[in-house]
Amino acid sequence: MNRFTQHLWRAGFHSRPFFCACLVLALAHCGRNAELKREWRLLDAPHAAAWKPAGMENEGKAFVKEGEITTGIGAPMTGITFTGWESLGVPRDRYIIEYEAMRADGGDFFGSITFPVRDSGLTFIMGGWGGGLTGVSSIDDLDASENMTRGNLAFQNNRWYQVRIELCDENLTITIDGRPFVKVNLKGRQTGLRYGEISKCLPLGFASYFTTGRIRRIVVREG
Image (cartoon, helix red, strand yellow):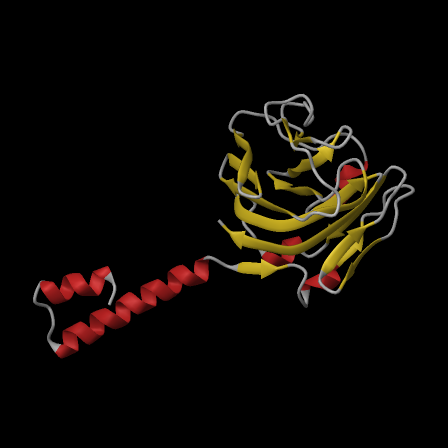
């Protein structure tokens, strides 16, 4: 019995017809709330088939196999793009993306995600600029190495890292293994992608730079 039905019972509204009618309404309301929070697992069928190589110049192999993405070493970048984003109907200003990423080989960024924001997108960099830099490109025309989201983490090869991205209206929060790395309000700020081929990952995609990256357990939820 939820709080609503408990309140009715204590208030004396417990005749069988009245109580049953209220219970049906309460359960229907809960059902509608549950339907609002949809979830998609993007490496499960049928979504797995919607991942395609981004088509970057001199990119390495990018593919999905057995529930896992691999982006091979490129010269310099390799990307992969999820082409089914628009068909999901995810609100562009309120969603959560979770995934796990590993740098299997190399020493620069891996598992870096480009995700939709406003009419373009942003990219969360993991292990860039020589292996340890984190941050978001670009905010106010400043890339991840220059703006307020810049951070550092000594990423280890062959270790999985859990990433969580939450966009709630103008508030962007990103954690790695539960540790906050980005918390920024985008109101009044200019957002967009760094110049170059990273735009080929829109609306949602991953890229690596002179590294082999692996990504798994990609889940998108309505925020």
